[in-house]
Every structure is written in structure tokens, then in C-alpha cells.
Length: 128
Image (spheres, rainbow, N blue to C red):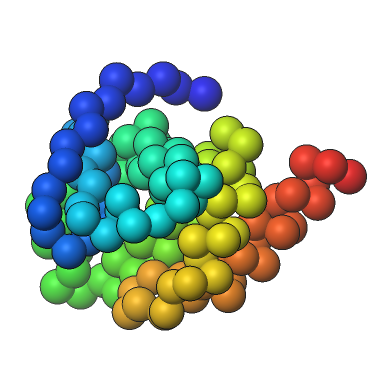
């Protein structure tokens, strides 16, 4: 597993968290969550940094693939699931499951239900 140097940035924007280029930006809603969920979200966002998802998305966009390629949503889906797996492997499955149970589906991203099922499957492979 790759390691990453990360800077945590606080904002008053109404977001939970976002990661890219060695930074995790947490918004005002982040601090309303229980600590276990905050830790799981940070682990998930760290997964985006470790796997260089922002870089991959920029390369994809610079290639102007969005003009003729509908695989962007597939890439976003894969990135979210990979970051979830990173959080699970880091020991934050419980917090991530608690957080995902509160989310509503968002366009282009895997549904919370799909992500929860995937986490349960990952837990089965880790404990089986």
C-alpha cells in the first residue's frame, strides 16, 4: 500500500469532505457527525489520495473523453468503491457503514445500498 502525506483543511462550505492532491477538505457538516463516522470518512478520503483518483479524473478530462465516452460514471463508481475498501482495510468499516446508512443516492455515484453491500462482502472476505 502506498503512503500519503495529507493536509487537512477546514471550510465553512456545506460539504462533508473532499480529497485531492494531498489535501482533505472538511466542511461544516463533517463536525456534526459522530467521531467514528468522521474517522471513517477521513480514511475513505485518504483512499482517494493514495490511489490518485483526482489525478486520474483530470487526465480523463484532459483527454476530452467526456465528449464521446460515457465511462466517467464507471470511473467515479470504481473510485468510490476503491476508497471504501481502503477505509475498510484501515479498520473503519463500522463508521463507514453508519455514515452510508444516512446518505441518499447521488447521480453518477454508486448508491449507498450498493456500497453497504460491498462493505459487507469485503468484511466477509476479511473474516472468512
